[in-house]
Length: 406
Image 1 (cartoon, rainbow, N blue to C red):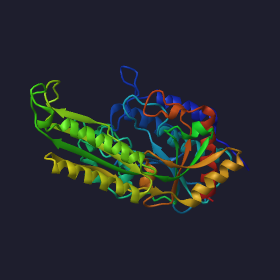
Image 2: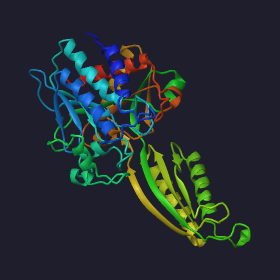
Image 3: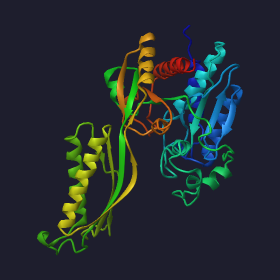
């Protein structure tokens, strides 16, 4: 029997949640553990209750909506993502996966299905990492990669601590993170990239996820007068930083699967007529192949050593490091099979962004489903996915959850 999610209800909820947590300028800014986050959490929990789900909140604030049909036993099939956002966000990132998980459970309830396993939908805390670092925090804590006490003590960009703020908004639960071990985990998400739209494919079966290496580099030079210091006598930290940027760009273009980004840079003293005495910048390296990612890191280290040999002071600080993730082949195949049954064109693909699924994959069979993002745009109010694609993705999630819970 083929069944489907309630399309109108799913789209309506996405819009209603997307209207929640906006600032005075109308921007969607539902940062973790803010008043705006509380508004979104309250709305989600209201929908979970209406669906008859048991709500459990753990100490890091992860929200679990659990459906335990009569006769169901064992570890649950978990679906989910996050509802926190970046500053000036779109309405789909994360929220789509959470609300689709709820829609799947409701569709199974409506059809009178009695799965042999429980099902659950989870909204993980602070996936975006805008206010508190690191990102993907709720899922990281849930799998034991960071202790709850350490996470709750983290100081945010505004000087607050996560634990105090979660307590203030009423979302520090009593359960220990990781109390609900998944039988399997499936995360439905917008692609946040241009591939599916460009190829005209409505479904992506995500088979792996890129490894991520973040560093902060500081290069020290000598400040001096911009007009009186000959070029041959300069030790310009800004030029040295520029050389690193060009090197990383060329390295990524010549390495299979690689991308490299310098997203922030700051000069000292940052004056128009002074040679920079210091340049501080971030480096984001990604590759789905661990060996190639290590090669990118090694090449960067060697290039920085070359700058040191030229007399520059160079410091490198590691900010984050995650190995590539290979998702469960059987779940990936189930996604493809469902797409074929529903006559939807599907392609296997790599996720270029980090997601909660990469954390949960440490402890349970996991995979992801992608739907197209118009123009590849995300983390932006222009983020958009057609309603038909949103519904198609949710129905694929429904099929896979049914199979995994039988």
